[in-house]
Length: 428
Image (cartoon, rainbow, N blue to C red):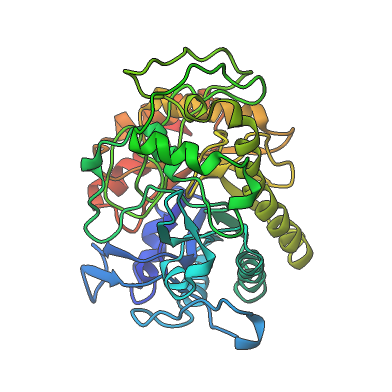
């Protein structure tokens, strides 16, 4: 199954949209049911060409009795039932509709509830990032999934940001690149020390992180931990998903590439060097800190899968996932796999060889019958080139992808939609 991603406003008010999407050759559409703020081009819409979405919103009717402390916001830029209107229009042309659900990435709720957001080792809050160590956040995510399945009745459920967000985020006029923080620094700045997280780590973790970021002491030679995967390369990313090695505009995601297998000895650093990986920075604390981080995503994911299966037992569940245990963002860490999901989707927005490695790792974690998806970028900096896109699809298929999730059919120009159509035809 191939899936095209769209927003509700791409469909509502544009009667030509459903047939245009069906013509791509995909079987399903990932339709945003809960999504963060953005500024989006709308190149086909009869009424506008640019749409400003100033805050995260829920695109189904809000039923007050269904929520607890955290209640999502209603949009003003599209109808309150935009998801339902778009769903019906898409299904009328024979497309399946999967509910694209963004979970912990919510600046509206984070700003209103600063006690529930991720805070780094210096106490700085990340208002866009709800921390899943808090019961209120877990409950909100459960209710969000339940409402989408109950009211939206989708053909599938796609879970994005199913874990803690991290340092990387494209906020208003982002100004963080000049600090020259390394990928390891970004991973360290993604560790949460909010009131619900801080005491879970070894006692001196915060001091170790702060000292490393501030370069206040030389890094001591330490062996690598003896369990868990070793991060061979890390990439700080900003985009609706991941762009390896670069920073791009878009919504926030921090993701990291990792090398599968058991740990090997990390080269000792000297006073004149800085840790290249988070494992080198944390040293003997690595295993305990990593376990805390992975547990945050595991706990949220297990609760959401349970509530989804109880609410809509036959609805397939897709996870946006990253095999790297230090990942933070839209593609949550999944270093041990998840048999409760139907599809595991890896980000493929960067170097195709690196993307293929990540896909192969996710494939290695999958269970029999579990599908692997490649989240493929069809927007800049990718060219509007069908041959180049088809070549990438072949690379990802060889790495284990059995379906392609195409980003983004509402933002792409006519030339890019034509490239998607032709690339899928060549790959069929």
